[in-house]
Amino acid sequence: MGKPMNAYRYCKERQKRWAAQRGLNLIGSAGDRGEAVYTTMLEANLFEPLSPEARREFERGDGDELVAKGGPAKMQALHSSAALTCNVFHYWRHQADLLPILTALRMPEERVVSIEFEAKRPIMDAPNRRVFRTDPNLDVAMQCDGTGRFHEIAFECKFTEPYGRCEPDKKGLKRAYLRDEQLWAALPACAELGRQLSPCDSRFKHLHAAQLLKHILGLTHRSGATGFCLVYLWYDAPCGEGQEHRGEIDQFRAAVAGDGVCFHPITYQEVFASLTQCRPGHDRYAGYLTDRYA
Image 1 (tube, rainbow, N blue to C red):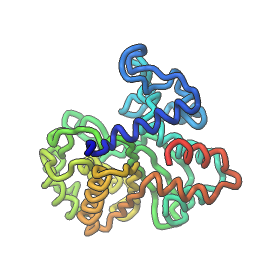
Image 2 (image 1 turned 45 degrees about the horizontal axis):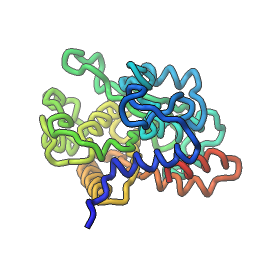
Image 3 (image 1 turned 120 degrees about the horizontal axis):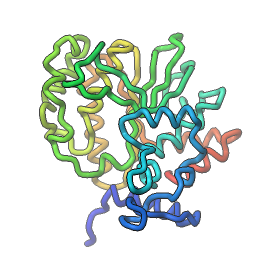
Image 4 (image 1 turned 60 degrees about the horizontal axis):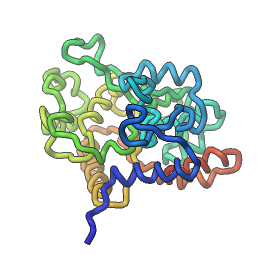
């Protein structure tokens, strides 16, 4: 019997096949060195070029997605989560009707007034930067006009990250987050989960639960515990690791449900399948996503 399929490798190889079918030239992380999984130009890895506004948002984010350090930028990787996020959401920044993407995400119809990449959401006013060095960074934030259920729809987007190696102490919750009880006043269930993940997370192998808790803290500080929906948008892999990840997502959702937090997990594949139904007017966009990622 062969070895079980590796989810990380599965995602990468699919992207390499897509690039080969299109005759794209690929380079390594250091140009002529490293695995050739980076496009030579950023535009080759995106459905459409970044707008100046979107470029500024990625540049001010903490991920250094557009920074080239002796080689291609992170977003030039075929398996880049930021590139996937951009390919899905950038298109809708210049569309008048966002109902197709909201429907594909299985979200209620909201009047979205803006879409922002790398949106920072501080967990408190004037945080001590020696303790809380950075604010939680949302991959995408949709601001709503306040006439619907939510003030904000926030997104944490994952591609290959859940299938890579990460030590428990690297993804745990720092004890500093639990010292201020006021932070968790409206989130007792989240606080209990936080205590289980601090300072090390030995419970979740694939899900970065501490990161999600920090997002919830930042969103609660801005909109209240029930004024937002945190969408966990992830790429499924047809193997044991994918199934394990799905089980951990269910555990997290059950753990935070007692606080009334809207935590909504959905796979990219589910979104793409729905988008194929709205092809009239969006054919090229939906076709690109389906051909490349579905």
